[in-house]
Amino acid sequence: MRTTLLEAVRSTLENNVNVKVQERQVQFAQGALEGASGQFDPALGSSIDLSRARTPLTAAQQAQGPLTTLDSDVATYSMQLSQQLRNGAVIGASVSGTRSLDNVSRLSGVPAQNLGRIDLSLLLPLGKGSGSAASAVEAASSKELEATRADLTHSLAQNVLTTITAYWGLVAARQNLEIARQGETGVGRLRQELQKLVAADERPAADLTLLSANVADKVAQRLSAERVVLDAQQALGRSMGLPYSRYSALEPVDGFPNRPRDLSLLPSETSRLTEYALRRRPDVVAADLRRAASQTLADAARQNLKPQIDLKLHVGYAGLHEGNTVAAAWPFGGQVAGPSGGATLIYQWSFGNRSAQGALVQQLALVEQSDLRIADLRNAVGAGVETALAGASSSARQLLQSVDSLALYRRAVENEKMKNRLGQSTLIEVLSVNDLLLAALAADIAYQANYLTSVARLRFETATLLEPSGNGQTIRLDQLLSVPTVPKE
Image (cartoon, rainbow, N blue to C red; front, side, top):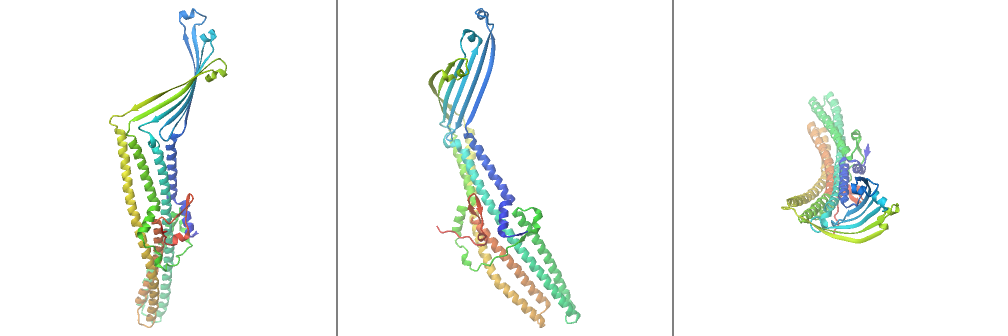
């Protein structure tokens, strides 16, 4: 499976397990916010009751008519609608009615009595639970949702950085394997030539023993390089979120880009980079949001130290409609009286108030914990930016020096081979210088991988690895290969 760096990154954004777990955490926070907002949903209640009661009449009552029992039919219904507002107030409305008829009234010609009420009410909390304290849980849940979204962005950046590191690691492993193979082939070819010289008595057999040992060493190095490639494939495949069966088929398409030529392109103002990172880093944003959520709950807990004082106001109308027809069942079709109303003051105080005080202590402790975490995180961000900048600068210088080093080692190998042909150098010296060249080639590969990884690390630390785009994140190839630039304010 051949893949480019951008394809590997896109696969990470879509399939990485850590990213998917964090996406579910966002969904969990959305559910928590929905639950916290539910207390402000309108609530509708209703009831209907039908009953018949049979009560025996006294002897005096029975003497007045043909009835021996009082048969009463009563139907009651009610409907209530209420809603809590975000300032703690509760508004309500209710409609209720009762229809009653008994056999005594029917015998006397008295129609059914339909009584009803319509009431409006308003509950105003004046102490505990008033103001912003009523919606504190919802406000805190909203901030937690924003924080988990910032966590998701941070998780995306972390796993993209892991993929970039693994990709360049696989490129380096492939190139190191190729060097190991070339070294093994070259020494094997040299042994074949030496065998001809030994057979012709032009070189001692001891040289052949030494070279055979070197061949065995090169074979071992090649086997080790193959194992490193397998490890690199597994690291990349796992970060990309691929199934295990596809790990060993991964092959990088992109090689190392051109080396940096101008070290002046590296940003040098660590303080500006740190300030920029502290404003943009999603983990810092998430920590600040969680601190704000804790402070919101702490303010509500302080508000709830007050006694509960509620003022309840209500106003209503009563209606009476006499009749046995269906239309008469609506009590407000007849006589209506009102308005009537009233006010109730409710006071409640818990001596000691330890429950509210304990809740406040807990919330203040959470605020202080958040302050400590934020201070530590800001220090870590500053140190991370400084370390990443130093790493990018150091690896860039190593790359520039490696160019000269490789040229000199190649020249030294050719010189040593020439000296050996002239009898001025031993085979040990030729092999030693050649091994130094192979080591320099491996070091150069490591320098290239380290530089590109350091650039990605610097972008991660300064929150410039990903770009916000709508509700998601985008990434460009130039972001992965170039150092970040901080806009001047």
